[in-house]
View 1 (cartoon, rainbow, N blue to C red):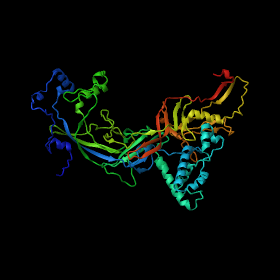
View 2: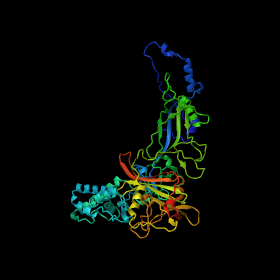
View 3: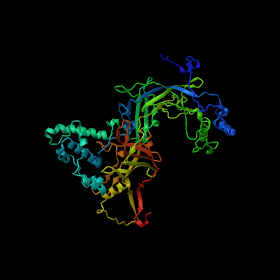
View 4: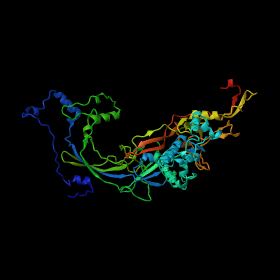
Length: 613
C-alpha cells in the first residue's frame, strides 16, 4: 500500500487523521518452579529502603506519562560540492581530500632570498630520480644529471651566511655539494614551463622520449608525496591577516547553502570554524554534485546512560565510583545544580536517537514523530528556532548566521570532512609579533629560523652566528674620546627582530596598517655601505622574492596587546580512504605579552664604560 504524503504532520496528528494500531511484545521473567506464590510476592526486607529509592527516582511525583517506544525522523541532508580559497575561483570539491588539508596546504618553497634552501629535500628528490633512472634501465645518465643539476656551495661572502655562519650547516652542505643530484632544481625546471623536458641539456639520443616520460612520472610522484595548492589562486592563506579564509557550498532545494570561514587559524578544523552566509553564492562553471536528500529514518529510542545514573532495575544499586551525593554546590552555582537535577530527577526522560550521517554532510531536522506506550504520536520540532542573536535561545553545535541581528537562526548540523588525528612535525618557522610601546612599533621576532638543510633552529642562536660571521674584527678600532660624553645615533637590535612600522592605510582615513621594514647592518665587511637585513622566514617575506619587490602590510588589528605567535610546519594524516597526506601548514596562537627591543635614537652616552649605566 502506497504511503500518503502529509504536508503538515503536526495538524494531521492533532485531528488523528491517520490512526494507527500500536502493539508490542512484553518481556517478563518466569519462574522455573510450578509454585508461583513466592515469586509473585516480591518480598521486601526493608520497606524504608524501597520508599527512599522511589523518592530518589522521583516516582512519588509520577505523571503517568508514556514511555517512548518508536520514533521517525525526517532529515534534509546535502553534501559539499564546491570550494573557494580566499578570493580565488570556485572549484569542485570531492571528499577524497580532507578539507583541512586542502585549506591549510601552502606551497613548498625550495629557494628564497636568492638562496637554495631545503638541501635535505633537494637531495631526497635527487635520490628518487636516481632510483627511477636505475629502475627504467637509464642509470647511465645519472652522471650527466649530477653534473647538470648539482648542489654547490655559495661564495664565502655576505650572501653565503646561511651556510657558513653555523659549522653544522656548512659541514652538511659540504657533504652534499658536487656529490648529490639537486632534485629540487630538476623539479623546478620541469614545472616552471610546460615546454621544459627532463631530457633538456642531456645527451640522451634515442632515450630522450623515455627520459621525458620518466620526468612526468617524477613530477607526479612529488605531488603525490606532498600536497600543495594547484596554483597561487588556490592558496587560502591571507598574508595581511596571518590566517586562512575560504568558503564551501552545498546544493539545497531552497537555494545553495554557503558556509564561510573568514578567520581560520587554529590548526584544528571543525564546525565552529564556519558561519552560514545566506547572501553569498558560489557559482561553478560546470554545476554538478549530489542532489539534496530528504530521508525518513525510523528507529527505537534508547535511554541515555552514564556512570552514577540511578539504576532502573528492581534490586540494583548505582555504581559507587560516581557519587553525586558528594557534590555540594552553592545556591549560585547553576551549572552544578542543573547537572544534579538532570542526573537525579530527569535522567529517565532523555533518549538517544542514533542518526548516521556521512562526513561532509549538512543536515537539518525537518521534524520528529515520537510514539509512546499509549499509542500517542507527537510531532516535535526544533527548540532552537528564532532569531540568531536572541539571547534567550539555547543551542549547541549550530552555525552562526552572518547578517543583521534579525536574521533567522540556522538549526543545521554540519559535519566537516576534517581529520580526527594529525601528526605535526616541529615548526620549521616561528615568529612572535609583539608590540613595543617604547619604540611605538611592532616587531616580528623570528624565534625559529629554517636552516639551509631544512629543520629549524633557535632564532637568537642563528642571529648571533650570522652577526659574528659578518663582524669585521680586524677593522674595528677603539675610539679615543676626549670628552666625557659622546653622541650615539642609533642603538643596535638583534638581527632576528623584524620591524613593522605603523603607517596610514590611506590618505583619507586615520586607519593604521603595519608595514614591514628592515634594519641595517653596519659592520658587514662585504660592503662599504650599510646592508639591509631581510627576514629569514617565509612567513614574513611576502613580496621580497618577487620582481620588482613589493611592500608587505599587516592589518594592525591582527596584533593585539598580548601579541601573536605564528608558526609553519609539516603535517601528516591518513584519510578515510587509506591515503596519506603530507602538507605544509601554518597556525596562529595568542602571544605572551609586550616586549621591548631597546631601540633608541639620538642618545648622549658616557664615554667612560665604567660610568655607563
